[in-house]
Image 1 (spheres, rainbow, N blue to C red):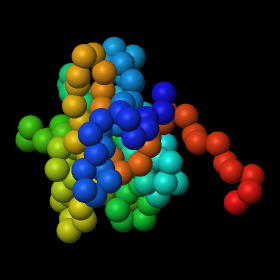
Image 2: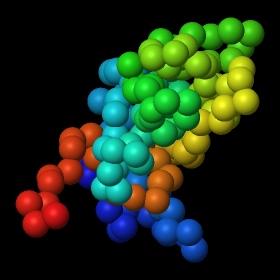
Image 3: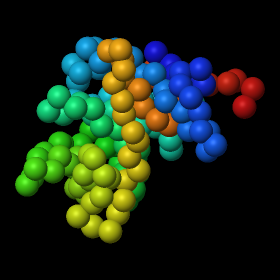
Image 4: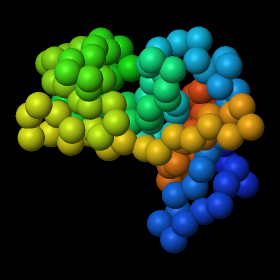
Length: 134
């Protein structure tokens, strides 16, 4: 399911609530990659951990590693994802790392059984088609 501008009220920055899909289906996996219409660098990971959804940029702030493939652990009550490339950790709620790195997080809301993520672009669980003219 792809989300478009009609999926929620926009803001001055162009950020809108993007419909991702039904919570019941999305909660079946710990992490899903959401493709951005802006391209690879704007993709988002949607995590489902301990009954809660979290969203953050899909590429590690360090070297672009795929965070959706990282391990998720809880330490001292903090849920973290670990980049599979260099083991950098990021708090799922804040994006803060044990290092000076900061991963961008995105607001998530549940409404009428559906999951929404606040983002500047359309998001989809399937890759966007490539425009053969470009």
